[in-house]
Length: 293
Image (spheres, one colour):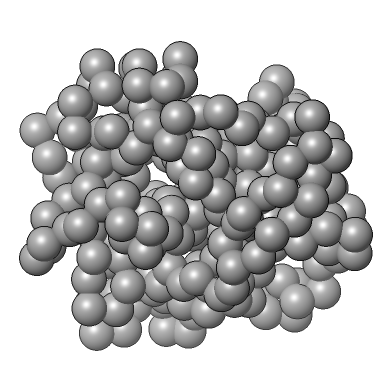
């Protein structure tokens, strides 16, 4: 059935999304429609689509409500190629900005807003510089696959990290190696994870630590979207990997430079394990209406 999609374009450090409000879950887009919306020549253009839907209207949302009854809104996130994704670190900040703009939530002070995702409940709060998202407990996962990428002459070992979605982080020697990569081509992982993974290439700054904060540069090829200007969960995974490689005296606060801007990452010990938190902007760019077949 054809209908008019009323949407908002949003972005967080250049990672851009088409968002729309569907509280009752009446307009679930097909993968083909999502890919058409995200097409940068024939559609709106975006790295993904986010539907704002009440958690009690989705099967996936039932799990979120069981985990936290306050997670009344669900971030229904899809990659640019129409494939489903567990969650998105930049997207969840933009999503909360959208919920506030639409009047769906009205946070006061620095209270945490519970959001349902396919990776579980995540919490976001408004800060002076944008938003901070608690991405929960992270874990090493996926081993150390070899990674091949176009213009990288020799395969490099990566480090598998799960922050609600899968990542493989690769350390490079210098800025020239990082800038020379052609990430329009899909990096090859050996062995290949069954569900795929986002692949981050990272270079430490010189010096690595300044004023108690670690500093790195990163580029990313996102599963289902290709190279993007930023990946929030990827920035988190990259900071965790470099801290892991640097050893026990490495800091718990990091600044991650991505092509689209700068993100902040910090690690915090909790009774249930070490949580990782991501901070950065979440902005709404424009509203529009798109006729969908």
